[in-house]
Length: 474
Image (cartoon, rainbow, N blue to C red; front, side):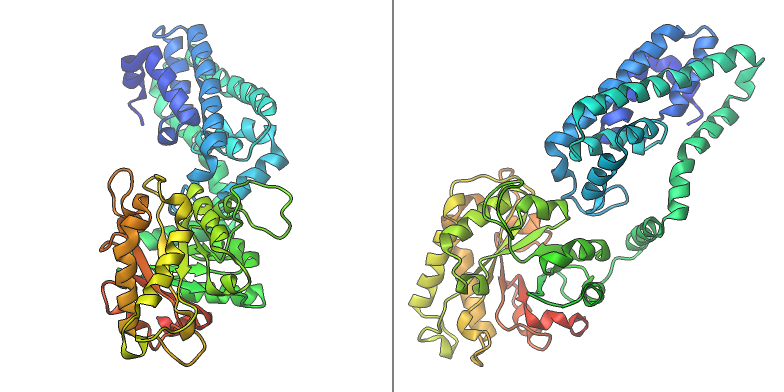
């Protein structure tokens, strides 16, 4: 940090331009020197190493162009930013916070962010994500760029001219500038409990990852239309917050549950079949809205939805919409009645044909599609005849059907067998061992879950009503 003088002498005008541009609007630029760099460059101009007028013009242009690049990037691919895992810099509720922040503070936020390291880098990106009006953004971007890109170098130039032997104090001055720059963030951490808790949780997770008894498996908790209160939902979420767990609460609780869970992943119980960001669709929830809330998975084609009239055609559209928005669909399939032979731990031909027919219809729209490495699909086999009937599906029957489904994956939807860069689907969702993840989901509870998960071919389970008491699973 304190080798800025030889650094600036080595990189010259071009290097300063590149650093300011990157630090103003590129993700990779958040760690680069900003305030201290341009102040020190102004000081060097006072010593005759640089021309001050060329310098401030160059810094101003780099700052404005950098912010514009960040804004354009955020506006174009903004929602994709928040599909990555939570970290100190990325959190699933940042998208909504950014939009509300810029709607409320607008220009003031853009100008002040210029003087806040880190925030300066991400501010224009988040302004684009929040779809701030461009003309308004540009106006305040220019004002902020002028105050920062011209003001700080001129300050260094002025002090270099009026203070004798200022080079003796340059380290102290740079430290002071850094402290003043980061003090708003320090104050925010001290003042805001939620931020303190997030940082603490990040550090604790880095030092100690929660162990799980379901290593190498995926356990999906489908809460259905439960519980009745947010207080109960938060309690359930905290008890479910373990590795390899997906929590799928009712829509009304998704945002709050997303703030609670730190290790588990967030899922949704359904989504609207059209790929739209809005419209006159009363009561529907779009895929983009789910993504903006931090949802990673979406249950599609559940037997209870099918029983209410949801067709394979609609399910196929939902699958494609989910994949197009970067969500991981959990496609539920299963025969509506117990076929002959399964009582003896065997599946009849008609049972397999029924499931094959469902898969062919449900995956019809993506048969010839190609999705990026971040997209995948999971199938959950839920034999309807075994749910709430007293006729439990044996692990052996579930195993045979799951093997059958996996044998079909390549022919049903070739794009799902491997990604465009050749990474198996299982690896893309963090579990290695099969080309397509297939779960079992029929009356699973804490007592019988291990009977299914003991088979390596069964990649996990979809748990319904039993998930309302999560402590029994850990």
